[in-house]
Image (tube, rainbow, N blue to C red):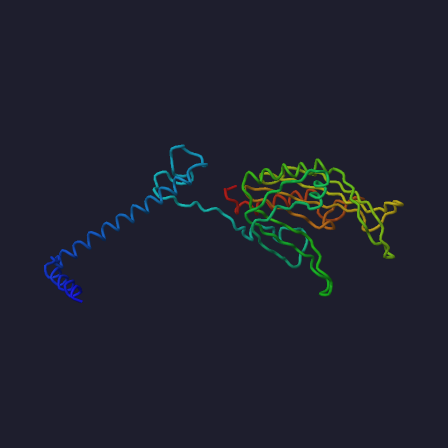
Length: 306
């Protein structure tokens, strides 16, 4: 107990003899400490920004010693992002007024990171022939389907034309047409086996001949091709008798303008080209003109001016 009192007495004596700074000096020390903290924070921010510029620099064109990306102004100390167009406006699509026949409802949708699709059956042929197409993935896409005006409300809607527009990096857009050519070379003729039901509901094994060819090239935009797909009427594998739907011709337009690619597929019954003659609808000249109209629609929506 005596030792505790001695400690307390000593503590009181030391506190009385301690020298405390004046209030003005305490405030001055606080101001100096605040300034040091602010300077250190500013230095930290500059170091982080400098580190970011150094990381972004490699892999881009420009001087090897420069830490500023080539896409940014070299005199700027802080990089400013260059905007890249992604969304595809509705105006980039064909309109009903662009077509020589009347249409009904117009259905549409948008997407992101969609793989370009030209002709799924042609791709299936390529895979069977061990020529798998490496079709590019788009940054964005917009699609539409134009339907035939219904004669009655109780009748099902019928497709007149479908269109897809894809935004793709420029090198991949050029590469797409090379992949299409690979598929065309591999699938000039292809026989597809299937099972069909006859009129009396009997299942029969059939063989159906398909062929693809480029009917026209480079008629619109930066690159273009008109694909002609002949679908022969299926025949029984056993007796060779024709069954199912009659022969038909399908056409597909593929047009690129800058970083945009469109795939336009009119319904077979809207195209004049027939296996057994010509019809009253879209001729090849009409299809080529439609491709030119599609290219003009794409032009204002590309990353670069046409």
